[in-house]
Image (cartoon, rainbow, N blue to C red; front, side, top):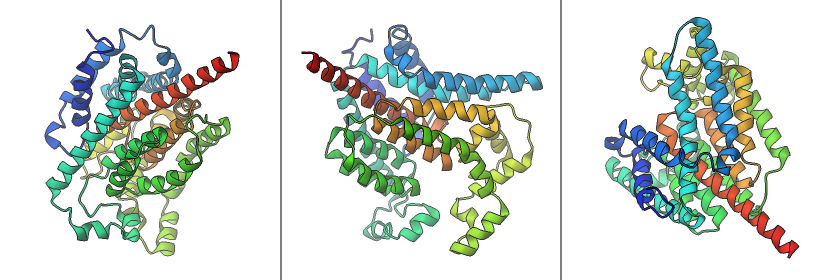
Length: 384
């Protein structure tokens, strides 16, 4: 029923893509998870035993399972079952299962076509979003180049959904790998989202990618350094959330640190001061939702959240296994590095961001597989 040439895939993925996109609020319903679960069941399980990709990315499944196991351990200790931990586990593994399923059902050429189609859909949704807000004027566009405003509040004058630009940054990395001129359009739309980390990463990647070859693998040194930095980052966040650091920041830059972090400073300190019982994955989000402060329903820092919910062991397993899947391609490393940078200041391990992970895994699988094929071809040519 779901053979390699089945057009079903081409209908399903754009529908799911739209379901996970923020601009079309009417489509933001639980239906997206029904589509996801059914798709994973029908597409993934028939190929799971045959798929080398499943083994290639087993580290993600191991890390996710370890985080859930730690959560179950906490729940057994306190004698309470918390279903939100299982939901968080689903958010971790479902995007990868879906991406593997897509890749195994389609040829490499069709994956190109599919991502091109998703890019067109993303541009269409962005235009719809601009039309909805009605703020796409020349004055607002020119005000975007006020860098002081950008790096203080990170709110686009165009009134766009800033998280949407993450999608376009992923498209930008993909099109840089392919050497396609679409990368300039992806860069433009990513900038329009006016998200600080995205803009900074765009600038850095623009210069970095000029010297990278698509066949270049990731040096083990890069992976090791990245793992160490992100494993130590929770400690740095604790130090940054102190009153002393906040006072130093205001005295140095004349900007309130809580405003600069868009209330993240307040949220993190509220979680730390709550001294709540930890039941593993989902504990902090559940607390913030029950707390009920507008705009503060998650911690906006998944790096610290994983550490607080699943201990330093969970942080190490999570960070190492995610970066380890990037060893075959430096472009895969660029994708995961960006997602971890986002996790430093956002909540991307949740229902509203599964699209980002689906697209990230599709790109990573594409990059890694391309380099494997190129390596095999080089070996065969030398033998011949």
